Length: 315
Ligand SMILES: [Zn+2]
Image (tube, rainbow, N blue to C red; front, side, top):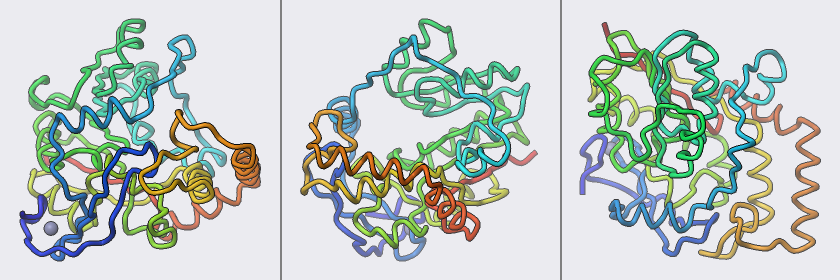
């Protein structure tokens, strides 16, 4: 087996991980390439296995189409304190052609439309069909396929917390290169395995999220992957939603037994009264804004939990 990013052949096992949210059975080794420091989950993730994983374990959506609201503009101190700029769609200007890969329920699509953009989305979760039927958005339901679009077509492509889920990230980036216009930009966000969270919380870090998160990029491995595609990294930073730290404390306080679903993340498990009180207290603590300040501090130092890559296709 060679490293997907640099073809290196020497690894060490970082840790063994399991699904500590939804209880998918199995324990998976996380390997780190000794050459490019790319961290990845070892296993054969065939499309059949991934379909089983996402359709039978990821929580079924309780989303109500009537409640659909596009994202709104957010500026100023409160948006900064919340880490709103961690969302890649917020970096897309008005009046451009944009593709959002992994667009969820299309909240970003409504945001871009209101700003005069020509908007496309890709989403693997079938639940988006209900929004598409109602609002007529241009969404491909399934996996990203660059052949669905003309070459040199988009001004912007965004992926918010998506690249870590894919089995072949270099291929995904090559697809993005193909459909971007010369001078066009890709904006990607993903968990930061080199941040403070993975170091402090160890096995309890919320972003291991096995076996859904398959790739954890180091800056070296991301540079190598992007270089293989002819794209250029313009800027790297960490910008993290402050809510993640609230989830992290709750995850820590309600951590499940090995391979059992979490009472916090899984919709199927009933909480005890004590667990409900703990979650309530941690949500109250979040109102003190201490989580926000800690998150902003680590982002300022470049050790935040979510890293952002600003990428450009050369002219
Ligand atoms: Zn490598």
